[in-house]
Length: 262
Image 1 (cartoon, rainbow, N blue to C red):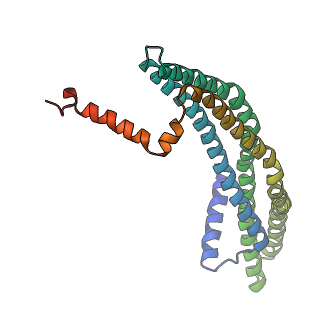
Image 2: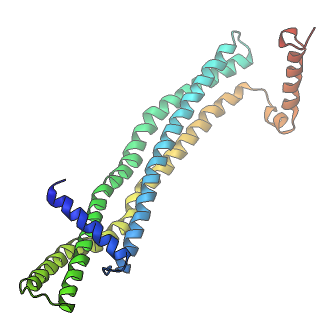
Image 3: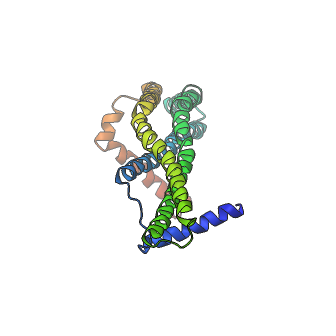
């Protein structure tokens, strides 16, 4: 920071302190404050959306990869040609295809239609925030100039140069502040109004790709069901499968190597 910039920072800090103690009048613009609050809310929501959209893609890819690893393990349990072995192999082929399809048909389009547009919107926030910060700094300068000018009006100085100088500083500060203020007052509402039409295509693409992922999974895994005997679903609903599993667990408990037998 230059020496001039350092002095400005000190002066603004002093102005802020005097405003808190009531020594310098603070300019209140309720309408602008409301628009800035709406912008801050949108900024938080967009940043959260960007994060969660990325988490969803990672989760979708992680799910497909985890299914593939599970299928590889389950398929390795069987070395015969039983119905169960055929089902395990069919499951392995199905989830491997799903894993490949996720990478090929969903990953790239999701990035292009969801993550990139959201990321583009979020990339504007740092520049907008810089402009807001400049506007707030120029407002402090303007308030400080108004305070100095008012003091000279209320208590004239013996130096005839001081008042004209203070008037010029006040006018310069006003013009600079209003330039930033008018730009933001015009453009912030436009930005806020554009967020819905901007996000609509990404939202639609997200829903379509989620539906595609679910439909592909249903179709592929539905094909594995033909390897299971009839009535398995009904037996599960009636609790019969739980009884079968408990029976096998009891047999395992009776084995000496499980530490219960002997």
